[in-house]
Length: 41
Image: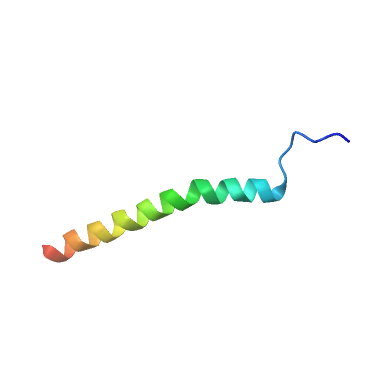
């Protein structure tokens, strides 16, 4: 049985989650930090 080189949809979505989750969290931290700074002024 031949194993195709192309990854399955599940593998692709798994990679997308792993790549986007950290940047999403960092973006959320960055946003809350800038909101706090804005409220102090």
